[in-house]
Length: 460
Image (cartoon, rainbow, N blue to C red; front, side, top):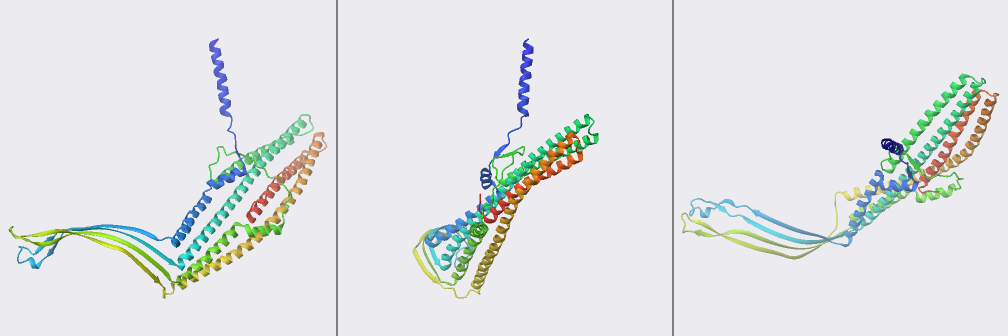
């Protein structure tokens, strides 16, 4: 009895464990706001753009400090010279050899210096660095807008793929109903086996369509998480919590165009680059202005060496007497002030100013070209949005009409007044209308996203 009880308990536990193990992990829930936050924090391309601000900010800080603070430096040195041999003709008559070995010497010193320079170029470089920082910020804002647009579009692609799965499942359900109906009519002698086989083929094709739709969802989810810059979950499934209603685009084309010309990130970045190019011209012309420099320094040094003192005649042969000498040298505070006026530099300043003016002209032309592009993109995207919204209404009517036709064809086939070919034709038409409606719906959302990208700001 106890053995049966233990065996039954083990069986129950095994079943519970098997059921728990077989359950698939819940799909990750992801909202559009969370997706955008993840993309800003992890997308490699966007993070690489953010790194540019550190260098631009450091340059702006350095240029400001060069204008108001001096430079400072501390130097230290130590030198030691090994003893050497030299020829001494004055001692040749006294010493057995005229070659004298001189003891080594050493020196140690340190100094401190402060310097300050002021010129037109230093003043202009400060404005140039600040303009470059604003241009870098504009580039970062534009990169963020592009990233957000890509994430929104991929978010919509995943939603569309999931809608296609639901549609494929609906198609499979219809195929099963058709197959059951064909088998029922064949069993009572009102249908043929050919109809049954055709219905089986239609069901198999619907199963293939559902399989491919699920694979498409997984691919789109992988691409979404690639945009976010984080690994995709395994399995690649996600539950998107945001939905996008279809509403009439109550937008004004002229107002959108004016808004785009004011806030479009690419235009804002080019205008910031134009300001930087203007400061570049000023910096180039500032090379013709005089410059002022001033420096203050203080230094100390100590030298240790050996000097010749005479001969020790008490030894045979006589030896040289060396005396160690240490000298401390102090260079007191020294102030230097100078003014420099450049006169001739082999036309290097002329070449620099020419390049700066060419860069400024290029910036003007780039802004003009981008304004034309923005006008064309906003107008085209607005017209595409209006057309996409009108297409949804037409596809909805087609969907309703094809569904009604399929219902009538099904009833006609059920009562024997219609053929199986008519039923299949009605099913194909209804499935195509359903698919076209889904495509039209997400074409509308993508058109809205394209318009937001062209304007450079969310519009809903």
